Length: 409
Image (cartoon, rainbow, N blue to C red; front, side, top):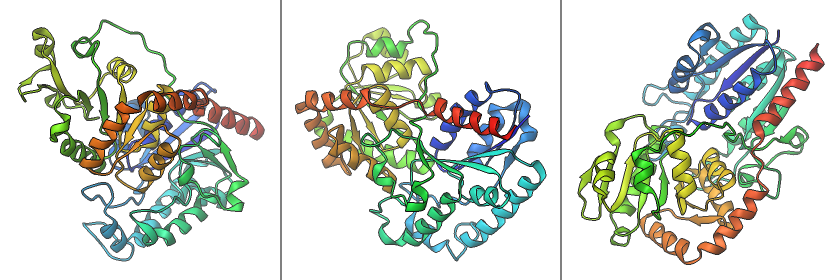
């Protein structure tokens, strides 16, 4: 029985969703023992996901950026490097403290293999103990825009820690179809360890049931799917930019479905062109000519229906979401970035004619106009990209894990 550690970076939800899909596949490999590590909301999700494995779930205080209004606060995060900010100890202290805590767990458990999605420090601890480590990522010394040179020393530090992994698994399609290309600037040493395993796409099949009132309401409608994703600040920042655009007169006839990625039924509502508000069931029963539908949390079936039937999707540039929309569903995007990782991926998408880039309400309105005017050209490019999309990251990574464990026998 092998002991496998999974260290999940707690900023956003992409690291968690990738690892949960992989974890399900890894459990098919045999009778191995799994351990999970994260903090905050992700730690809580792990406890909910695995109620019978709580003794193997550990909270480790991995350092994360400090939240601002739109994603991480650059100013606060920079100050926090050497100074305490908003009850966060100086970053240098946090790093030292969390590595000591992780080291104790390493020594106590005795891993055969660790998989680190975003947690660079675990690579260092594994290397010191001659433990095989796989680092899953879609970033390595990303191109800087808004944060520019302020974070360059930090990027160099992080790159050195990533390079200590036994293998670096890029959760994306091989070039020239790598949407995170501008977030990858590998050193010569790191490049020797890189494997493009593919996106960790959701390949899970589900049994369809009777259509919900939401699905019935949107039937035969032409609309955009506006996705709010990420942690609280990223989700809120994305939503604020969407709302600024929605209040422009040009949007009066532009149907949209807004998913909030929050399990809160009080969010659910339907608006008509005059701003009258209805519940989803009421709007369906009355045959309301809707203009906006807000949904806190879409069921798996509802999400599949909404994505399959939308004309385009508006996203903040999340790598996981973009793979799902462009690759798995072949839908063009309008990208409205929150931070540099997003900007890089949306810039790449724009250059490949898979979607459009917007940063404010004026640009959003212009992007929607351009999307309608040039839709077939953009859609053709997206279909070509989708045909070359590798969404088999889960299976490919599981195969690598299986080979490593076999070699250790």
